[in-house]
Image (tube, rainbow, N blue to C red; front, side, top):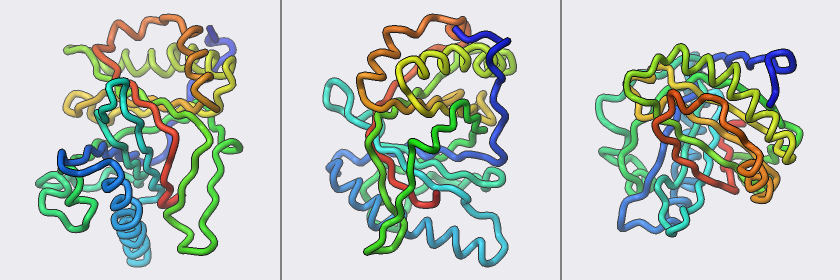
Length: 248
């Protein structure tokens, strides 16, 4: 395990990283959801950000979607997550997004509510995670793959001291995880802490990029407890192989 002598806790990325967890409606197929998300919804979000930027208004600075694989039973607990980085959290909508659909994607998805997080990049890995805009169509959205990404949605135990929890996560747990990720050839590791963990569905999210599923298997064999269990009630683990990039 890495120690404080060899590990420097990451600094916060400026801004608020908004998480939009997406689940499709029962009558919608996975393929329908993804098609509408990519073709009908992402271009509107991209153009909306451009319009707001041109007017000097707050707008999304980064927009990336991760598509999640089905679990062992073949079910998708969540179909994916959209992550948008803003200078600060946008005002909370009075109703969940998509309650009254404005496009085909929102017709296909359950209404969704974002939650605000602070991002900490432990391992950058940008050299292994390329952005290649399209050349025969509009540059964005585009896609990327060739990795195996594991996302942890972390729920805290009731009554947790979040200051102590988050300090341990960044000072001790992140060092432990980084050491093992490096051993198995992983290349990117990001921690996201909820800005208001007491009221949000998850205290945080961790994202680890491996080169393939073998890296994830190796990680599970090598990782050792480091005390996170004192605060963690449950971690939902989701795998994914594809990202859709709206604003890099």
